[in-house]
Length: 140
Image 1 (cartoon, rainbow, N blue to C red):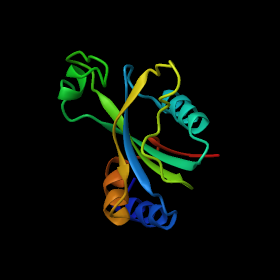
Image 2 (cartoon, rainbow, N blue to C red):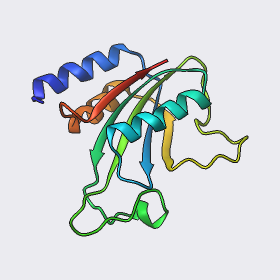
Image 3 (cartoon, rainbow, N blue to C red):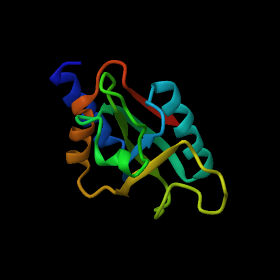
Image 4 (cartoon, rainbow, N blue to C red):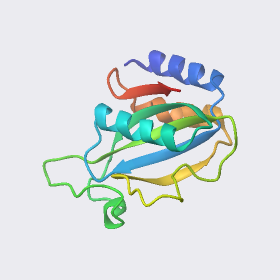
């Protein structure tokens, strides 16, 4: 994906008025298929979410601190860790996006979740690692 395409995506995403951002890590390497399952779970648990835009990003350090906290799988020297950045559009502000009322323990964690303060900055950051095959939008 060219820099021009990334800028166009960032501008388009700004117009979507996302209001939350999050990072999702899995105990397994993230693929588009697994991420779609996790995002569908988030949509099911949070009826106020309208849509989620996601981009899978490689970890620059596969032995990062995230693994010490069981937020990611343990990699081997030849493999590369990853995580996904999410843009979330919700109709109702919410302090969390995981269920606290069930005993369900998903195979992922969300170590970072907060309200967006600078949408332009976040969208430009998220598309930085976007390729033709590592992003998705999930709409309710």
